[in-house]
Length: 145
Image 1 (spheres, rainbow, N blue to C red):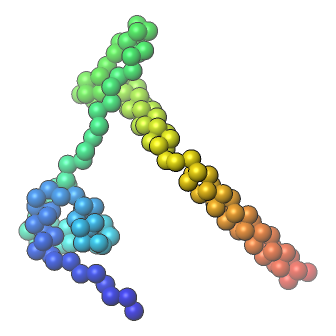
Image 2 (cartoon, rainbow, N blue to C red; image 1 turned 30 degrees about the horizontal axis):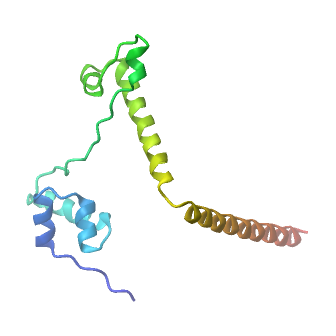
Image 3 (cartoon, one colour; image 1 turned 180 degrees about the horizontal axis):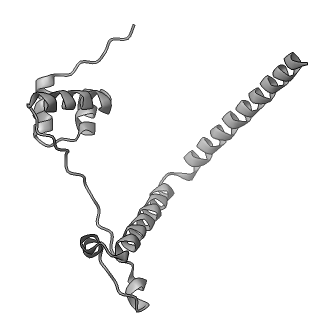
């Protein structure tokens, strides 16, 4: 039977009080985030820890240059969030698009041979699974006959 990893609860509460995220604490001890969340809830219930989360790191997204050029009113993300206008939906959509573009840009950084090798592996796994499913379906149909 595998031995369960143990954590120093004093160190856990110290790290949480210092503002470390649950994920960072979990990685430090080599345990799951859920395990640290259990400790966090216990500390909050006992009054040893204030109920707050570590601040999230957010990346501000600049407004697209063409939005102002077309004559449409340009609203920054912070302004639109404060006013709650229709611009907030457009701002969040622009932010989402920027994130998607950044994700594709980072994907381009991965060496192509590695991607192709991984893709081929997934294709082989898919073919094997499809063949196995076909064999199982044939076995079921024989049994039903």
